[in-house]
Image (tube, rainbow, N blue to C red; front, side, top):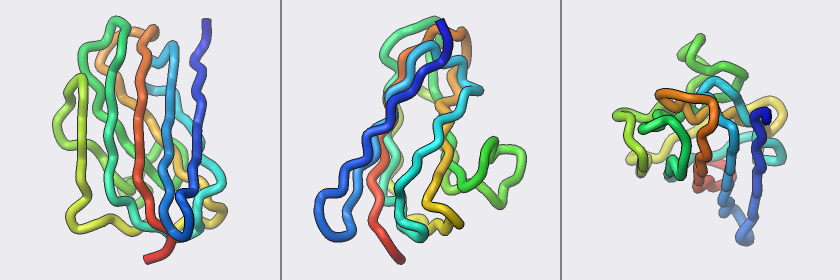
Amino acid sequence: MAFSSTVTLTNHGGRKYTVKIQTTEDDGTAETAITGLPLCGTLLSQMGQLHSGTGTTIDPILGTATDPATNYNNIVIANGTAAAGISNLASPAIRYATTDGTLYARSVCDAGADNVVEITLVIMAGW
């Protein structure tokens, strides 16, 4: 099988958004485009869980362009310490700006190409 991702973007009314990204056959380098977001926003938290697969840890990264790790100006948040489950409360909250309302996420699994990962982002529209 090949990498697959599902993005569920929920607007909870007003400025509050939740993004759930579920991936299968994740090798850690595959990328998910999250579309439909506010052009400018504030990231409040990033959570992730490696559910199954060969990998033992994830080290997610979120950016404003594809492959954000190649240009640090594109990184919104990079996880600090790899683990099977991560929870990053952005304090202070992290502001981002895009030209088209799209962010790019990678799980960065440590091994294998058969991993199942879920990442949840909490975003508030505007700064």
